Length: 457
Image 1 (cartoon, rainbow, N blue to C red):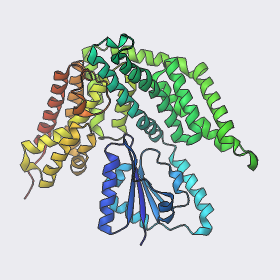
Image 2 (image 1 turned 45 degrees about the horizontal axis):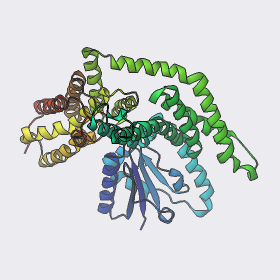
Image 3 (image 1 turned 90 degrees about the vertical axis):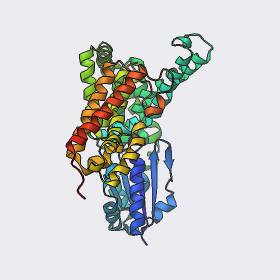
Image 4 (image 1 turned 90 degrees about the horizontal axis):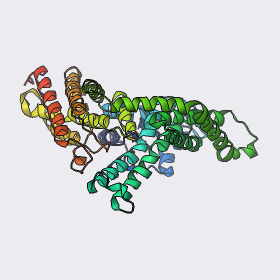
């Protein structure tokens, strides 16, 4: 019997990764097809595929929006799709994998070259490269933000006294974890573009962006610059076979790091620093009207595609600002991301006759995902009734984001949902912040129930 392997990975490694794995595994059981699924989530690689398993597999399904080390699968038939596709159509992906032609041993070299070409073509997407960097940066931001917040438990300026626990927590969170944010972002953007040769120049470019003051925007530019420079060097430097080993360990790191560093210092750094300084000052000086408009826009983006590119654009923008000590947008984004699943859960409670039993059960699960800041909990509802659900959740999330900014709420941790709210000083204006989430949840439920019709029996 043909055995299928699969790998699932989403940028944040929280929801889509595991939802896709579960969908594929369930469909495989129904079809009685042997399958093993590797997940690359926020907790790391689980159920990792061994070289022996890859060698024995008929085909591999790669459902991912970030790098999953596809070079492992050279010579094997691969079905490559966005991670959301594995949630929507797992059965179709398995059928496609089963229908793939296995590679004869004689054609192995040709299959390897074809796989390399496909991998190269797939890595031209800026979104995928950016999200690979963001997913590797997130643990540093979460850990650093919470440690900084914990240092404030001893007093808002207690960290200034050397030798205290508050000072140590601030050094770990702000001095170390936050200092690594931008270099890691840049390094893994470059890694996604050029694989291992891009990592060193990306890390150095990101570190220079931090030192210059170009912030997360400079880090993003440095990552793409380093990645494409390293990739170009890897593709176009030709050496005699006995000297090829010098390319990855000497020539590419030296040239790519030097080129990236010089461009960051003499060409890119200062203009980007000026832009970042202007953006930071503008955000810090926002009046109430502009703050409401920004919060509303971020809220709309968070609900529009529930974990897709628009949602991640708003999230990445807000996470990047944490390094510049701008915490308001992060609060608006997390609150607005919690609102859609919470609002759908409330809607099923307020008007149960307008929802099927399956939808009411899904509402209970959505409530847990909502309090955990997993916006993807709204996807099943949106997929079955997009023209009523999506406008409703966008209205609720826009209201939540606008109120969060109006109230001046700030958030130092970029994830965690309701579970970070009790941490002292993680969230400012906690009562008003909670009120913003409740308001958006209620409005989402009311608007959706006004649009919904009773279920026909």
